[in-house]
Amino acid sequence: MSNVNIFECAKPQGGEFFKFKNLGDSIQGTYIDVRESIDSYGNEQFIYVLVDASGKIWNLGFRKTATIIHERMKGIHFGQIVGFRFDEERESKRNQGTKVHIIRIYADPKLVDTAWLEQRKQIEATWGSPEARMTPVTPQTPAPAAKVYDDGNTFKAPDNAVSAQANLPVEKKGAGDEAIKAIFNLAITKGLINDGMDEYESIQKIEQFSGLALTDDNFTKIIIKITGFTG
Image (cartoon, rainbow, N blue to C red):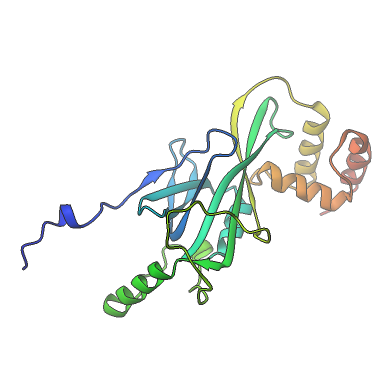
C-alpha cells in the first residue's frame, strides 16, 4: 500500500444543508446524488445533492409531500446543472396564519458538467455502476453535453429554463381566510384533494377542476362546483 494520507487527499462525505431563509436565496451546482432521509421533525424527505463550482457539497431536503419538486427532479439527470431559488413568499390559504416559501427549480438539459460526467464514466468503468438508491426519483443517464460548467461564475438560468415550485411552511402570523379554509376542507371531504398534497398542488387541482381562479369573486362558484364533485 502506497504512503497516502487519505484525510488530506479526500473530502468527507455528507455535505452541508442549504437553508432558504430570505427571498432570493439560491443554490446551484452539479446534481450528483439523491437519497431518502427523515428530517428533524420526523418527516420523510428526499435529499438532493449538489456540488458547486468550488467543489463544496450541498444537501437540499424536501418533504415527500412536495410532489411537484420530486416530479420535476425525476426529469433531471445526474451531471446536469441545477439551481434552486426562493422566488416568492405567499400567505397560506390552506393553513391559517402561515406563510409559504415558493422554491423554484431551474434546469436546462443542455447545461451539464462534462468534467464530472467524464470522471463518473471512468469510475464506473473501473468499479461498475452503483445500485439505484430509490426508484421514485432515480434519474437516467444524461444526454451528451452542449455546454460546460467549468468556472466559478454565477450561473444565470436561461430564459427557457423550466421551473417547479415547492411550498415550505414558515412562521404563523394572523388569522387566515375562512372561505379558503372552507374550500380546502370541502375539497378534502369530497376527495378532490387529500392531506398529502402541498398547498400549491391543492390549489392547482381545485382550479383545474372548477375552471376558476381561486379568488374572492369565485369562492361561491368554486364551492358549488366542488359540492357536485363525485370522484
